[in-house]
Image 1: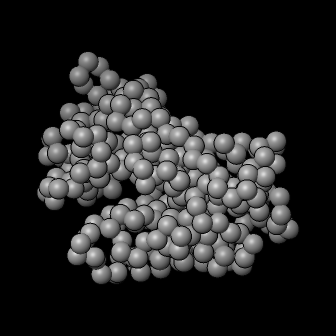
Image 2: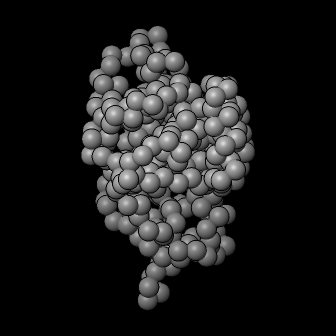
Length: 291
């Protein structure tokens, strides 16, 4: 797959869409550009590239589009708390992912969702091809292995995401921990009864939250604790904003609001289960955008 990144103004004229580049050039003219991109970014400067995955309708590579904004500094670590997906009961507690050294690490009970990917893929994959929900049910459907619907398109189109940004950490060591965890997961023999699922996943001991927690504890932050995604997010935010005394470590909070598209209902905030984290949350919200 080519590594060309196109830049231009996302333009939509009737049924024709393209990136208007310099000197009148039209990038990706005649290619299918997802309607969600057109709804939110028409007339704005964007980047685009082709992905290895195929659009089921056209038989051509899926086009990934994302805002033309500065690339995040690789020295930063960002913790992403994703609000819950209302149509999936297993999403009741929300979800966590983490950006380290320019890669977003995502851990899941689904084998195909254990990934290290670029930020633009994590946030902005289109609801096309295997990333889309099944058109009939609006949910994931893997009954046809040749045309699976994983319903895992860009997370910012699916959920509001709360961000804890941290600088001054040992990103090489932290990313090494998460790459090692990914390798362990991928080398785990599948369960014949549920081959699409990670057989060692457990909500209390081996989940998106506990793996990320263990990664930060491996850096020496033993006071970081938590089992469930939102509780761990609040615990870590409180620790890095209120407790630590490391002079080179800085932290901040902000929120990325969900970009509404027909393929996803508005996300919802799950509850905090630990009473101590409810108190920490009340303290944080007086000063910070903690969600």
